[in-house]
Image (tube, rainbow, N blue to C red; front, side):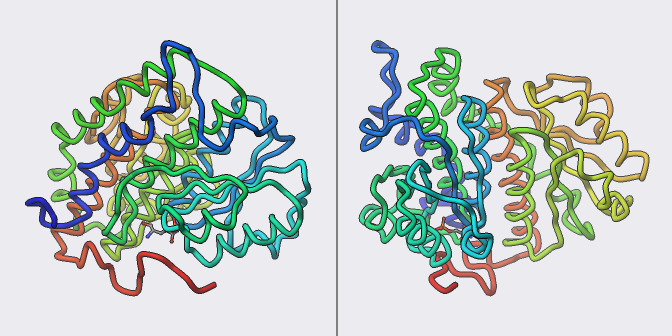
Length: 352
Ligand code: M6R
């Protein structure tokens, strides 16, 4: 059941602290100073990594690719539906990682099958034990989010992000004690966001907006895309997400007083540059909602602030994402949408 929540989506948003704990369990050994992922122990450091995924899982893949590149491994995220058409070079030195909550998405399965035929090593990062992706791939890592009923992916996104941080660390043998202690503290900080979020008030203020924009830089860029996808999916409103620097290359023409801009501004993701982008949209009269850990002066410029606790630069976007999930949820609630089963969408998309 929904444990007293109006919708599965809200229940699953609240299950994120638990989802993170489950994903970390027995994979991070603080005493031994090691991070290990079952079934990856035998893998050599790959020459290159390619991610294939769709929708929210693609946003997790974009983040996963950043985690690998940061550790010196060449990594790219591909939309699974484009992977074959794009004639992506893939060989036996390539590790192809399919990120898929259900493990049944036809586009992702197609891309994984072609990677396997090309002789690459494949890894499924999935939530569903024994799913098609788990069976297709040479290696499998379960994200352990627990069943997700809402069509909108929420807790599985955070679990995928954590899983990919662990994959990146395990593949490179890196043990970063600051990151590990931040991972340990993350469930508590997620809980703080859930307990103290002002997202419902923000949603009430902006539920009649014509369109919503989301911007973020670096690790916040995939979350900006995810914020917009969630907003479209459950509110049926126009929303777009951009890497913050792209705004001035075209989309800025759409920014008016009727289009609230959600800006993710966190330590470690070039906050002062993003602040510059915030000023650009404010000049056009757009109301700005900053999702921030207070790392820069953004509070002074933004019209509204959704606060998140300070964290590790790689984990701040995970906290920011919760605020965006809640804003979308409460806008959809205000508009009385069919939140758990949005029109035209299915939980798992088994056609190409
Ligand atoms: O099961 P998968 O992770 O492969 O699904 C991929 C997408 O269909 C999925 O993430 C979709 O974008 C969600 N409904 C977004 O909330």
